[in-house]
Amino acid sequence: MRKILTLFCLIILYIGSFSLYANAAIGKWAKPQYIKTYIQPNHPRTVMMKHAFAEWSRLTKDKIIFRYVNSTQDSQLDVFFVDKISKEKSNSDRSIGLTETKTSSTGFIKHATIWIATNAQNGKKLSDDEVYTTMLHEIGHSIGLEHSNNPKSAMYSGVNVIQEIDKSDLATLYKIYGWRK
Ligand SMILES: [Zn+2]
Image 1 (tube, rainbow, N blue to C red):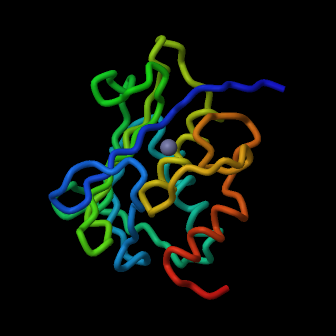
Image 2 (spheres, rainbow, N blue to C red):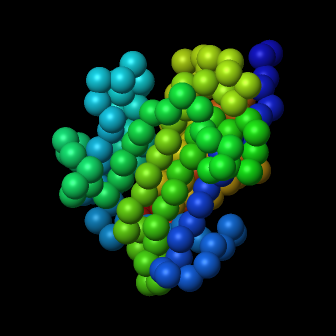
């Protein structure tokens, strides 16, 4: 089985105006069914990103809905495609996705930005599977999930081909938002 063990994600948390807490809870959206979402248009990965968002909505039975907007002016969640994740932004030399989340001191996510890379930092073009898995993972961060130790989880910090949105990811999300099944 093809298995690519790359540490692929760094999440940056801004808690209020205080300093960075790598292990602090990310927070949650106040209105998860109205997350105004901007995706960089007309990119070869734009449609795939919409599929990744739709998968999170489907599996949460539309408890999370991304409402697409055409500009970053009033968006709450932005997605940009980049050639590579810059090394300045990342503490890993192999990162292929990045999410930055700004959270209020009361624990609500105010804004999130996701960057999805086309190429690994060594210049190798990423496969569709690798990019899609990365999208699911970064969206997970943008809605409040941290890393999981479960290799099947979309929130596992490495990339492998068996990753998907796992029951455990959904259970964590239900807990964060206080949803009932
Ligand atoms: Zn991550």
